Image (cartoon, rainbow, N blue to C red):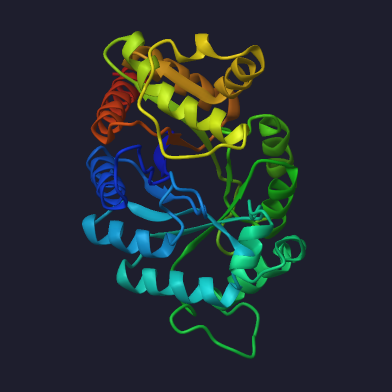
Length: 335
């Protein structure tokens, strides 16, 4: 049976505050837990005024304190921005605080220009080249499978699920080689989805942590009582995508009715392209689209994404989606 989880960017909306953004993420995580979602991930982004998840491990500690059973983790930590030792300590601490609930998803793309590289005191291009070695070192710091001269405390012996994230063949190849679960970011980069999953499953080598391939795929999902309302909700995320791709990122904007009809052809085409990994509409429509996407990809897990200007609207969208998916799965089980 397909599992369902949440990726949250901790969006900061126009006219809103950071405190409100964190409160919105906590409320969403609590709703996800109540609705039976498997995990709640926060993504690391820096120097973006509309995204508040930069101090990812701190945000996860806040969410962990407000929940009790749902897994929490990073979707992901951009490892070139850090040292493996620092991340081992941070997530080892989280595991000690919230035992058996911590995921550590790792990504290679730093997503940083020259200014951020200077702020981080890192040569991120060079650090990206060492990503495979850093993943192996980080795993060793947590598991002790390689004898290292320094021990991470907290860290060593932690019960943490390590994930590889990706939007290209590179992450799929590395996840397969290291025997890690693999999450593909189709919600913003669907181009290489099918090829990456094929490579991962074909080349997968079992590890102590994972005996067979395990795939999660992210998609944008917006559900509402009417199709028109769902499309209105989605327009804030669409504006964010357009702003990012045109080099003008900012805070999450209020929804705009008929937004896509106002765009020039290239931007409409970009949003249509991202629509390959999206479900927008009534609960029945969304449920059918999510299940079709899961069947097409063979994913073990679907990660539900999509920011809304009104945090309560995203919770309602999640409620409608999970209720419809639950009803569809119940209907498919023979009496």
